[in-house]
Amino acid sequence: MALRLHDSLTRTSRELRRPDPADPQDVFTFYNCGPTVYAAAHIGNFRTFVINDVLRRLLELEFGAAKVKHVRNLTDVDDRTIGQAKKEQRPLAEITQKWTAKFHADCDALNCLRPHVEPTATGHIKEQVNMIEVLMAKGNAYRGADGSVYFKLQSFPDYGALSRIKDRELKITDASADSDHKDSVSDFALWKAYKPEEDGDVKWPGPKGAGEGRPGWHIECSAMIKKHLGDTIDLHTGGVDLLFPHHENEIAQSNCCNGVTFARHWYHSEHLLVDGTSMSKSKGNFYTLSDLVEKGYSAAAVRYALLAGHPRKQLNFTLDSLHAAESALKSLNDLYENLRHVTFADYADSPSDRFQPVFSALREDLNTPTALGALFSIRADIERTMKGQPGKQITKGDLIALEKVLFAFGFVLEKTPVPKLAATQNITTLAEQRWAAKQAKDFAPADKLRADLTAAGWSMLDRKDGYSLEPLKNN
RNA sequence: GGCGCGGUAGCCAAGUGGUAAGGCCGAGCUCUGCAAAAGCUCUAUGCGCCGGUUCAAUUCCGGCCCGCGCCUCCA
Image (cartoon, rainbow, N blue to C red; front, top):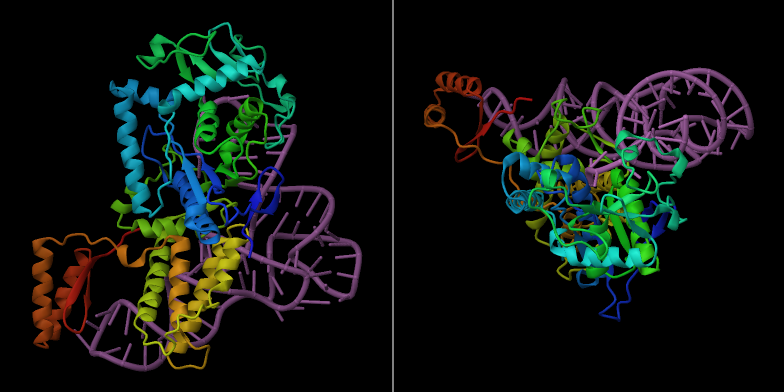
């Protein structure tokens, strides 16, 4: 069955190219625009990365893990990273290393597979400079009056194919009108001339014919793609906000430099909204993964919540959706545990098509909500059958298929329990007293102690042979 | 102004030209000293509003209202 994905360029759902299984050199090349490492990424950023992670997993299931090459960059030099370094009075590299480490930790917590290559802009200055020199030599770029190098938009008539934007429709902003160094306000920077007061010690030797400075933002992706994946790639992805101008500019640069189609397929995931509106610090609805973990939610629940809506549709994130995600994951966990403890009559590991609807949904443009819906319907069927109601026989193949489903979604159930917050000595003592009272069947004092624990914000769960404590959530 | 997306139950969210997936919450029941957990059952005559096409529209077409995103360096 084919893996189909919406293509932003043609605005249709198209089958992804299938690499030749017989040719070990023929791999599916996949580039996902990564984060700018100047601060902690927020959950909106992670929506894109989690969606791309599911896509990566589907590609592996479809073509084989060895047939997929996934590259995601780190933007470690631009206005924001330099600005942050200046603000903190620290070297640029120190800032970007710190936030790269945080990004990696968050990705791990969210169980995202690492890309095969994670190139940095500062690690590819040479490649960027080379590309700019080619563009200058071909007449697609020129040195501006300020020493910067600009891409000459006029030299690329196909500009705007992705975003359907026409030059005259551009809103003229202060920033774009501000530049008399450029031939046209629409031209964008490939190389930015060094400005001591802004850039500090951040500078490199420039392309021939230009002074020292630093690369513009868009050129890094073009250069790193060329180096790590080649002149034409199979799939290029990112958030919708990158569609214009970033990806449009990448197309212009790469096409003009290489003379061939840049990306065969474009995919953009939509934005995450919080409480029905865009996230911003001033609105107080700006969340990082750490913010949510501190509130007592698991990273797994965040991952689930980010996949609960269609990737190409704005998703409204709320703390309630995390409650729902925790519960949903728990029931999936129960299903998995139950299935693992079945004694199967069928040991043949015969393939199961029970979860086919889940994969069908994922393969048709990454429809995660429909896939989750199907998964829960199947779960109900299995649970009913296990309870002795008539139904399709449960086989070991079902367990194997479920594990494949969990891999596709990236849900690692047994490793992602609800985080345990340490109870204070005082709480533990109350719990011990209550347990003792209960064992003695002194129910009145036991109930009193339960009320005390509840008042203190803890929930005590009785089990056959003991108890557990969990903090009550307040939100 | 330009480009694009969306309005489906208390909340989140799929979907289809033929009568509304799923999750959360809630309710009832089973179980249980209490509480929880777990299981079972129930919960939109309705899919922003008004027209049109059709045997049939939430689904197609037109208009309107409302919300959101982007429009030169935001995933």
